[in-house]
Image (cartoon, rainbow, N blue to C red; front, side, top):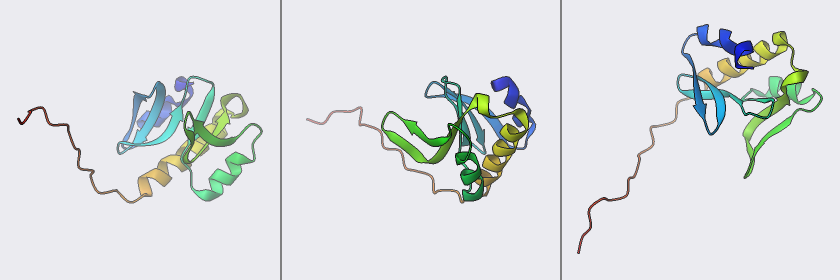
Length: 116
């Protein structure tokens, strides 16, 4: 599967990373495609494309162990030919690229020193 999406790595600011046991494609360090090992592809899409993907057989909200994963949608890879797969990938990439940047989160670390 990753081979079918290798061309995405030629797009500006797109990278690949393994996270949570899945192959993920990121734009500017923000995920736009998740490829879990169970033969599906999950996309973060704007509303019109989300509706188009949801109309495909077997498509639905992307679910993880704790329920749905925000507004992400998933589709079985066998139902996506290369052309629609890349079209949904491009729509997801442009959507995520256009989203406003969140303010950086302050990381809190547990104290390593003990007070008595």
